[in-house]
Image (cartoon, rainbow, N blue to C red; front, side):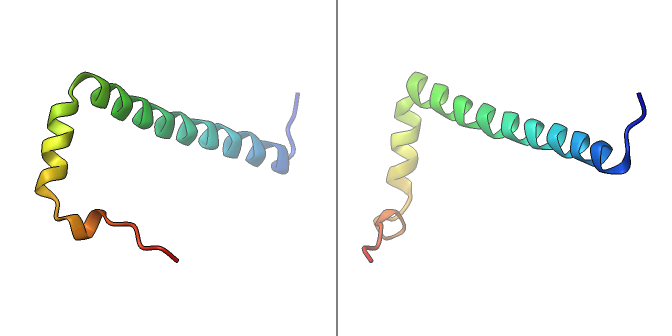
Length: 59
C-alpha cells in the first residue's frame, strides 16, 4: 500500500499528537498521585510562595 504525501504527513502528525497527549496526561496523573500520597509537601510548598502570587484576579 503506497501512501501519498498528505496521508503520510497526517499519519505522523497524529502519532506526534497522541504522544504529546499521552505525556501531558501522564504528567497530570503523576501530579495527582503525588498530591494524594504526599499532600504535606505540597502544602509546605504553598506556604513558601507569597500569597500575592496565588491570588486570582477578578475580571
